[in-house]
Length: 449
View (cartoon, rainbow, N blue to C red):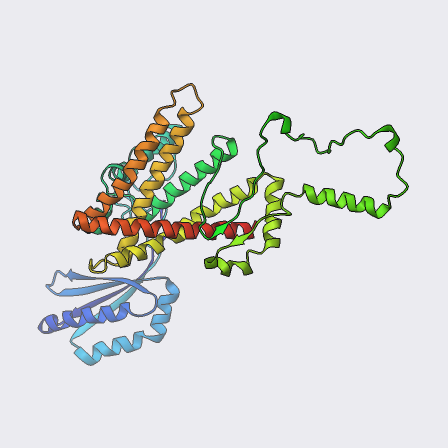
């Protein structure tokens, strides 16, 4: 099998021995000038030794296609050739030829180019794009082997990255800032993967009933409460049918009273329907610091959202909120990176370095939350003992703050007292910022439900 190669324009020059040194200097500059022309990709200057002792120079230009070469020959070739004549006169000779339909063959006679980028292969992997030389998987064993390679290596980066991420606080960020990057999974890819994994499992667990999906938060300036009071006893439980149970009327009440008008009956029905609407008397209060929300968070809009929530018992709102939280965190991290930048004004670090620190920390946080979620599913409500799940949750509550403190010390290299002050500032800023972003997310979710 063969593969068509690029168009090669070859120029062979033979200078007189007396001007060889000056000619070589000029030739290098001339070739660089040629590579600046449209359509020229690359060039190779070679020294050709003849039997009579003359040393010729052969320049092979690689062009995009034949059209680019024809454009050069018609527009720029005459000027380029005249410049050489003006410089050296008749002290050199030149011949030219065009090489087309080039063929690249591997030593075995089979196709020796990468299937992805057509670069000549010199080993098992392409030196240009990194793709493996195999053209297709020929057996089920090949498929299984490649899957096992992915799980056991991923260039060995995943397991090396996870080890540092979980048990060496701040080491991953420090190595990345020192330029040791190829050995680890890229930080943004790590953050996106673990955040998507956590929220995906959380959504799946809510839908399958593995957890109740309840989310409790205090919004600070906004207080909205929608709910149904639980009955205090079984006697007070309302019937689940759609029909309203009415007391059986007395026999003498079956006849319509003379004094009741049709409008009164309609009014009575309207009052009944109004009393059955749980959102009619929805309480809506705004704090003095959140008055700007009144233009969007109107009472009518809230009542409409409330009725949607009541219809499906809040399932649609909870699902929409769960889908919006990852996007909220994506915007939240850059804000916190700015807080970190202001907290370390004399560190000499760029903003993106603080963002990298937070990306690694939140990747760790999402991963450890995922482990807690899986432990809750595995141990609670099953035949297995219940104690591992709460034990892991308790360990997480202790480990995460310690992990953050040790990470800040290692990456920023300050004393314990200085780091403790920055730690407290970051904690306060994190809480305020997270609550603010969460209230905004609650509001946006309600307005777009």
